[in-house]
Length: 236
Image (cartoon, rainbow, N blue to C red; front, side, top):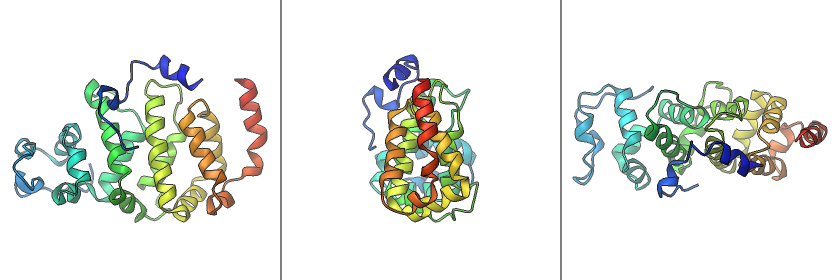
């Protein structure tokens, strides 16, 4: 069924469909010069950033083909730009929701870049520094993806990015995820998963959460899962 959904949304492809491989506008400080983002002469994007406002600079970075490489190879200036709560939240929004009005290339590329950066060890630690009680924090915002419309055009692609980042957070710190889910209303989380059962990545994420012995098992009301799960499967 998931393949059928993907075919239905064939017009909205992952950025990786063009051959790039995936590894599974707040708080932006004004730089003193464009070189603040550059450690070596091989990356010329910083020359284009001079004079732009922080939000415009951030969007230009997301569109640059070198930014994930620079981040993952620990370019300190790039990491300094990305590793803060505001940027983490902005990246989560690219994964958790569609951005209408963007050019097609940006619509496909930015969620891909966001997922790449969010799944890195450095950004996972940045997100985990935000207390679970912060309902506007990156992890709480990420889980609200399950409340979104599973029939929208980009749903199959964004579901994959969401599942990858959520699984990385869970495996990094189960206690933090458990507390975040508890404060998000665990019953709503399970109901959200039921709406996304056509997406294999979401089913695998749910299986990871409920089959891993730990605090999440004690938070999610698993005794209430079987009956609605059977109803959903029958209706399909």
